[in-house]
Length: 174
Image (cartoon, rainbow, N blue to C red; front, side, top):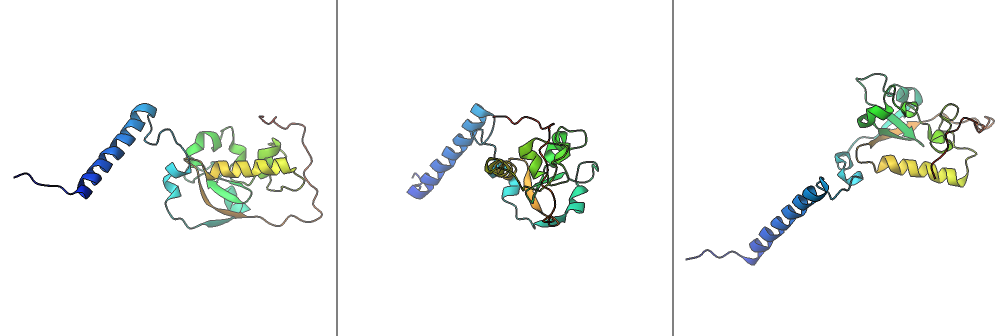
């Protein structure tokens, strides 16, 4: 006598095989399990709860990649991200090391990597402020970098001059 299986169990078996073939097909075609998607949702840190740390500017400066036993952090507009997996870029001697261990939001959009390594966004155009938001989203949605906290900045004095445009600014890509 043949054993009967319920419609529910047959449906679960079919669903299991479909899921298996979906991911296997993805890996065979794109060499990734997620059809080439690499974003926030493939980063395990998106799912793990974390206690947000609050850094002072001096504390954040310790995480600039010069000490290999510490992670590498950078901040943009107050949000601090762990970029340790990009140590080749952000570590000592890397192309973007000047961003490590500080909030250099202004330099992201002005291209001035000597004088504008500051969080001071006063005097930027609306388009430049959109650029800062773009970079925040870049780090927030990155597949390997993740947010670890915020940096507390000392208030900018009202009479402090707005950083002057620099002549050595790197041209922005269109």
